[in-house]
Image (cartoon, rainbow, N blue to C red):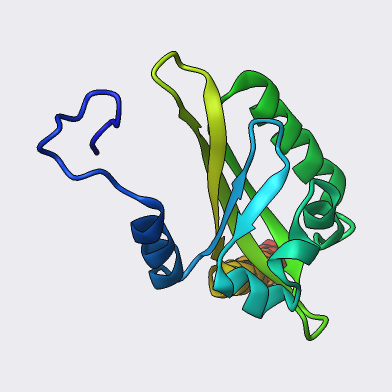
Length: 170
């Protein structure tokens, strides 16, 4: 990755048009905030998923209002912690879509700093992990089912052993 403060004049700079092209190309919801966490940009995938325009999505609270109620406080706390510490942001949470259903996403963000190390913006993505979560839940259910079957089988074997001991003892 080329750091703009260390790149030479001969190296092309990554401009806003290139960023927007890339932001629309990748399969994630892309967002940008100012240093305080105020959302200033969302890509088209965000608009398509939420049904809200960029203008309707801007600010700091709109984002949190789209989260599942069980995820809101945890997400707010994690985001505030990242803003305060200037450290990588990562969290799994559920967003409501424009059709009213919730989907799991992996939210990640990094700060972009100037040559003095001062945060200029936060760049973030939300990756849809709904299928991964569903597979994980299926795996957990299968594991629990298997554990139950093993427990019942062990009980059956213990009963058979007790029956054999009783027969041999007679």
